[in-house]
Length: 259
Length: 262
Image (cartoon, rainbow over all chains, first blue to last red; front, side, top):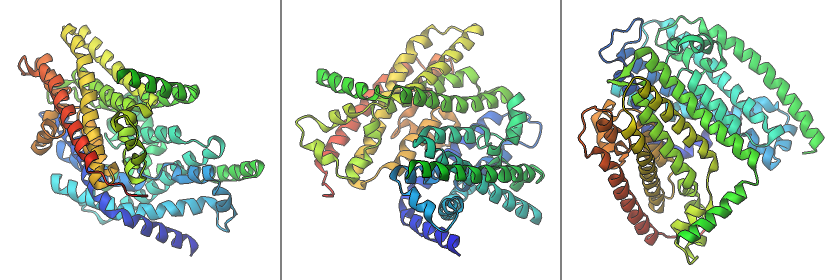
């Protein structure tokens, strides 16, 4: 299958950077350790209502830091804007595969690489620092797996949306930064979303950003029932629809420009 | 030398001001991104009141100084931050044959004006924190006097770390991955009290990557958390020493530089 080949090729291409990524993994783990230390400092000597004691929070942050590398740290705009600027996109649109799936396959190869050489080492380092968490229930693994896959897919689509705007603007730097900061602010990477006060806490769990980090982590840690998957599924469908629509509009836009 | 610096910087600003809208949107977005980050921190402290005894306003002071300082560094020295490219693509060779020091040329090549948004955001967090303290009836006069010193010294400390990381390129040929370790992670850590961290990290932030002296150490004294009177004096002192070390490391690196020939 052609998409499988693209995924495999892009995985192999990333494999060449293994060594320099090793330094980066240690540094990324420091981010995790800093967040864990912050929570320890915040929770120290306090009676906490609910499930979030210092140990649970340490696990939460550790799992978040690993999940980030497959759902949130994707290529800016999935590199759509690079093709648009160089003009290579007109060739990509001519290929006998659908442009959306073609772009997504490229990134999936990179995500597979990240899972092996980023997520796993970081999970290992942070796990050694704060202890590993393994769910007792077999179903938890299945639900968390589904939730994570949906998270990856929503992440891909969000980044694709940022990238495809380059057909109209050619520059996506700021759209990408806004997307990233919304992801980090409202995705749950620093704080479980149900702890956010007031309006923020009510709305954030229903936004697409929660699908990338919050739900997969909460389900894996058995802190929430797997019902969040429905919210993820709804966003996955909605974003697929709008991605297909935008791809079609972009194609038409390109025809008008003439490449 | 300063006249030359002024002239080159002025032309760099003029060049960028050709794209005013781009400058405004980029500065606004950089500021907004950092605000969102602080909102999450406020949400945590709103719920749990304090972090090892530091309340939101006190953490806000640390946070404001650190984010203004790093934005200052990114504003003034984008080419130092992106130095990897000069070594990898052999662009450094062109700088070495000019009659002016390569460091001065790099510092005048470009200003990243979008980082002004980050400086403004840091100052805004400081303003909110200081006025919060005033409302609680605490005296903030000394703090107000010291904050500019802290931001400038912090900028110098970040610049020294950035320059040393760039100089590492002379041996490693790359610095992007190293930056996460030397700049991004420490910058994130310095938003909060250093006492939070495991001892090896603490040791690192007090020695090789001396960000503790920028805000945490002087604030121990100024916020009455158990420091002594000379702590605030350490801030500019450490900044000066760090800068001296970084510049000699950089010069030593340049002498050992072999072009890639590409």
